[in-house]
Image (cartoon, rainbow over all chains, first blue to last red):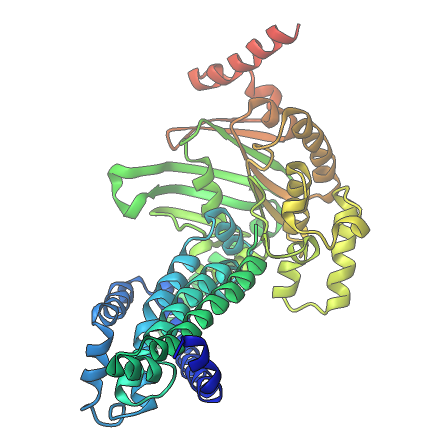
Length: 210
Length: 275
């Protein structure tokens, strides 16, 4: 069976898996953004937390993804088999690019602008929310873009712990030694990554100030 | 109890003595001010400066790069606190002010203007009024008034971003922004330093007329002796963190100090070329 005929005969199943995959990525990214951006703002204001926060986020990134999924299974509440565990792992993976870019973006503002803001009598919070954050937005978005592309890829491995998504086809294809089945998972995952990258790249350029 | 009363009385009498002086003439006063980086005496930027700035005058702080003039300016709006001595604004030490309140009452203009690139010109100019929670109609009216004041057509410029303006136009916006909440004091740190000579001369002329009209107390930092002579009602010359000469322009030129000569010498050489 050629990949194309496999795709046609299984298209409804593939669409469902793609949708599940997307949901997995969107939920994980939302949580990662909700953690990493405020944390990035915090470490800009409190340099002492910086090394610890970036260090911990980096450690998660160095753990091989399959191992991380495995480690999480026995942990109570967040672990187990299924989507919830996968989301925890994906969030941990997505943290570093967003956190690092948030920090770099917020701390890389032209000092003249910050001096003016301070001299105008803006409070630190006002400077953060009205000056630093809007000016850092395109850099932060670049981090979100990197994290999204990584998450789409890593989410295929989540199928190993029963989280569903496009990885299901890849693992099945590997087990069956059938390239068509592998491609039925790999090609939509690659397309998702490419589209997400293009879309977020576009947004990033639109938010760029200078 | 009997102990407290005389103490209060003493404190009160000090305040009463201080008040009339503060309200009348002196707006800013440096009293034996030192400033060292991280309070390490070996790294002194400003050493033992005492100086008063009177209401309505334009005091120019003149000096070479690294002479401490910008540091003096930042001591006034509490961007920096003195390592020793006191800086008084309206008779009160800057250390006793809430820095946010103090800064909102002092306009600040810097080189390259430091405009917010993500704000429109109107939003830049209206920043301090918006921080002060003026209503939007009042802000809009004030922005329009100020853009007229600095010679920019509000209809044309209000909606633009800083990057769409020339250097001279941005600097005009910088002045308008500093004036927005009508602060009695204006601090200017080489505001015209990055402009081409023709635009600079144009802005200097307009600004000196504006300064006279608005009756603000202005402290103006520059390394350009001609700018100092043009704009200053008095010139304070700094060398390596020390105040070495002080006087109104015509007296300043006659002062006997090597650093004054060094500055007046550039004046002579320029004249030599132009003649």
